[in-house]
Length: 368
Image 1 (cartoon, rainbow, N blue to C red):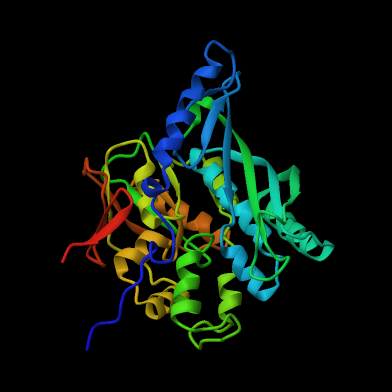
Image 2: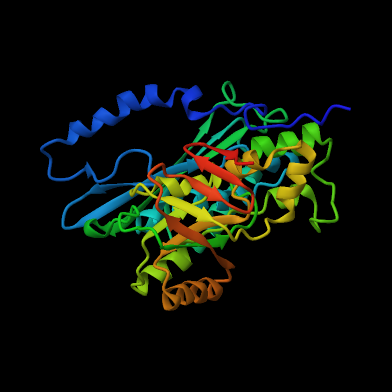
């Protein structure tokens, strides 16, 4: 008997950045930095590709900026005809990136592209945006609704939509954090996710509904609720606990939003170091169900999904500092775990010792 065929993200229709032609786009985007040459404000302090960029607006103040959308999680909302949580995801995916540079998120814009606008759908999206803004402590100061039925399609006639946001935050220009002080021996603290957050839904839907033959209303015993409800669990917003940590003036060396590419997001920080993760907590049951239904290898699961860790804080391996991080997370209702340590590794690899996986650039490989 042949072993079951294993799925990966590409099988589900998602291409890598190289295949998408990202380099061809950036070849034109990066030189636009020169358009502000000689101006007193607007110089970007970081390269394109970090969680958020920061522009210098004078008076030692940086304006942090990030943009992101909800992605194909919206298709699950369409399946259930429930749109009151995706606005939380839209806020979360943006503010969680802005805090990675040490900035306080202050305001957002939203963009809704929709096939057929109705008060019911827009009202539900608005409720989610309101709740996300409340959790993050930001104002939504404007946005745009575009009715483009000729361009966008959903699962049913008239149901197509996309939801994207853009967030700005403020940070002293001299305190922009890109992990520049991270060094071997520092500890990596993981903050628990609420589930898939906003990434990997194309693979998840393909594994559960297409290959696995399951339905959104099914209630597997390991979940305790329907698959659809589990998949719509909103992304955790980490602004309160991270702002609390920064207000305590703890020696926080780096902050990383664990989104698409999973723990490989750690490699975005500035120093050429590696990361040894040897104490991974058990992921939520939804990840195991996706892996089982799709026959997905561990290296693909840890590349695509957050696997239970939605955010990472890197700090010195000092008992008092680590206890303060855990106490702060606990105060905000978030589980936290010391996952491992920063190590010397100029190849910037992520070592998942329990899973015998080593990650570099955009993929994990098995070590035997």
